[in-house]
Every structure is written in structure tokens, then in C-alpha cells.
Length: 223
Image 1: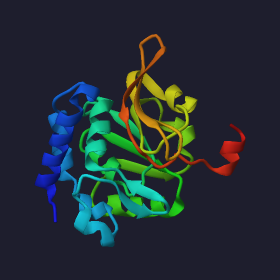
Image 2 (image 1 turned 135 degrees about the horizontal axis):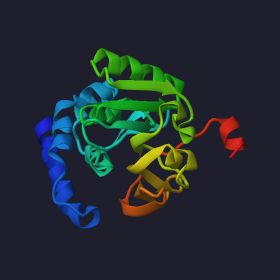
Image 3 (image 1 turned 90 degrees about the vertical axis):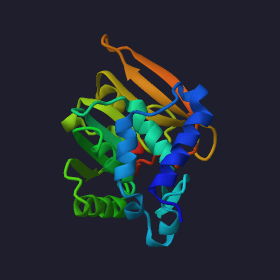
């Protein structure tokens, strides 16, 4: 059974393999410290715990997954947020990505559309002491306007296009990290950055495979 140390070595190996795509040879030490600190086995189902620290995604029920450690670290690093940042996460899932973010930034706001996952993640994060994470049940396409603007936004499921509401809720000089593409088809991890004049630049990083970002029926019907 792999442990935290081997997981960190696997992440470092992946960085070497992908450095030409991601444009760096190492992640922020604060990100790697967060990956070392958060107990990944607490965020996976009991039957998957022997694989908790393997460098791959794992099922968490309801058709959702916990992302592989390298991708969690990469997306956190790409946000480029400092310790005083307020970050929105779309897709709480098991709560693992939110827990990692909570050790890098000041405040995390996380939205989950699946009621059972939202409930269980909230209980798990509270039990493990992640007091700077606030969760809610809702449609992530709409963001969290009451708490906007955010110093970073991270989306943990693939959307066919970048949701306009999320760009609107992004602070100037901040980044949105999101997988974009067709369900179970070609997807690219994208970094969307809002400039000081309000213009937006979008840059692809590397190919990824995420579950689809779902919507509530009423939200999808209204566009």
C-alpha cells in the first residue's frame, strides 16, 4: 500500500514528465506541503483506502471521482494564490481538493450539486477540522455571487465551455482553472486569467479526463 511519501514522489515524477506542457520543473512548496499534510485516505470510500495514495483517480460514488494527486496539486499550483486569498471551488466531491486548498489560501468556498456528496463532504471537512472551508449545495455554473469576487476559482469537472458567471466572479489579475471539453472525450485543462482592464486570456495546459460538470434541470433549460 502506498503512503504519503510515495504519493509525493509520484507527483514529482509526473512533473518531470509534463514539464514542457506545464512550463515548470516544480510546484510551489506550499502546495506540496498541503499535499503532504492532508490525509487523502480520509476522503475516499472504505473499499478504496488501500489505493488512496496511488497516483490515479478513484470512484467516490454517484458517478463522481476524486482526482489523481498530481492533478489536484497541478490545479492548486496553477491558481497561483497567496495565503490571504479567497477561492471558489466548483465540485466539492469528497472534499479533498477543498482540504488541500484550505492549507494554501485563507478561505475556500465550495459548491456541490449532488446532495449526498455535499452533505457527506461538509461533515467530513468539519470532523477533520477544516474550519476555513464553507460548503453549499447548488449549481456550480452559477458560482457563488454573494461571496464574489474571488482571488481564484477552481472547477473539478469538465464543462463544454467556460461558464460566464465564473469569469464575472473572478477578481482582476486572478485565475480560473477549469477542464473544458466534451464528456468522456477530448478535454483540456485551461487557465483563464482576467486582466486589470477586465479582458480575459485563456491558455491550455494539458489534456485531462474529468467527469462532466452537471447542472440542475432548471438552470440548464435557462441557459
